[in-house]
Image (cartoon, rainbow, N blue to C red; front, side, top):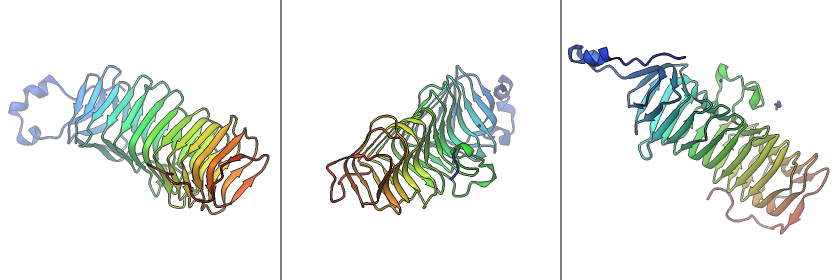
Length: 343
């Protein structure tokens, strides 16, 4: 593996409103559209078509109607300077286009979405530095090269979300920041808090925590189809906390190179090439009450400059390699630990 996204006016006029009574039947039934700047509060109904670059203005809130099915032209992007809000629990809304830029949250903007599915966006959720804390709950991010990307000083909370990446990336997947010329990943330079996340990385990278980023994930499953990528890969991340989570079908369950500190609690890492590879940690870290067993080459590997690493009640299949120091082991079990993985 290699180391290592205008203002226009809204097309609604008083003339159009006054001319409805004399318009033809086909004109009266034309589907609603939006393009350019959305300068005032708006509601997006089912059947809406978006075209070009949509900009939700700084003082505007757009509400997506429950159950709405929204289409957009290829290449469209929704830029959020204000707020995009969805309250559609039980009646999910969908934004689906053949290939589009996704949702871009600018400084001062925010997403507050419950029950929204995004399809075929190159980057599903992109939070630019200075974006307000955002949440995405009870929705899918389907067929996205980067399901989410968080710049510094941003925070995204994902709850009950299924994220899937394309099996084949095509020609628009130059993505060197994900670790290769043609690969996919979720990027975290800010703070990601995820619960009940199902992340299907296919044959690509999983979640990359970069340069001061922080990840907290629980009750989740990150998996690939014998992927050469890592489920969780820290490249100078600040802190990684993983609880009650399963990582399978990937190159490494976790790969720290390096990380400030980490805590792995009730995790399950099996059917990977490697379980946990610890190639640098700056503060005391722990793996506890976990099963790291049944991996092809090694379950646990430690190399390079690490602070104290403690293994407490961690079951392995004996495939361990420690260089430049030994972890502290407590209560090593002789059988798998019950209750690991998602609750």
